[in-house]
Image 1 (cartoon, one colour):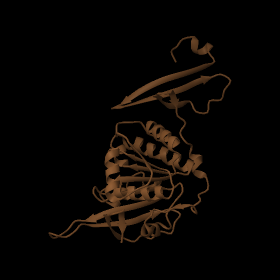
Image 2: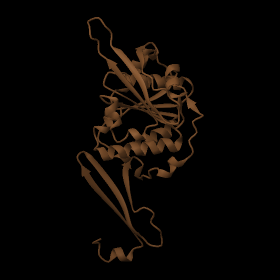
Image 3: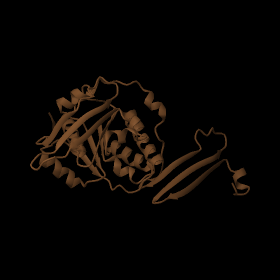
Image 4: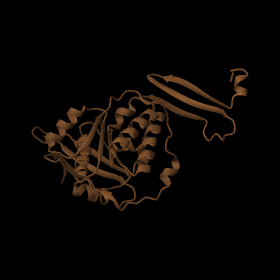
Length: 284
């Protein structure tokens, strides 16, 4: 390694390295030698926190092999949507709400979060695009209530492990049953495709391991465009929102919802119209 005779004399060697990719700084801890010990994994990414250095152990893929129990479901508070999904979102599932800008993704996520919170679930709502005040104001205007922990994060450049560590700590502090991230697109804008898939995979493993129901929003121009992404296969449920612009003066915009996918459920892929009013999203 170039350290001279010392590296042969010592029992262990720990190397700290750092690399910069644009605005992102990644730190690695490598253990090339530890005499008398079997080194399971030689390299780890670490972060520096207020508590010092945190060498992060990311959930292993084996966690996802646990048996899936779809009997415990969280109702969304919208009977029509629960029926389309197949009885509600089951515990530990991952749901993506996708659609173009202005289709109602945030309002639908807030409606589901509010209804679950009113049923006694601990809900952590992370927003990347709005302030806490803006989210609270939207809830007040729509008549949405419930004890929801709202956290606003600036979508600054972070490594996948940094996102994972930050959200893991928030989940520990709140003992959450439900995690909502609005929006995934803001996170994606600061990562290359490989790192973005890695960040989402880490969060998937974390929520699966803990049985946390995970809801995300994502901006896409069409359902076909979302399906072609590399992360659509990670989702258990995909809810697509869309709208039809008025063709004549005085006409209202039509909003539509479709449950494109609901894994382990007998869902109904029926196109339904909805509107936004008192109580959030109302599906007809």
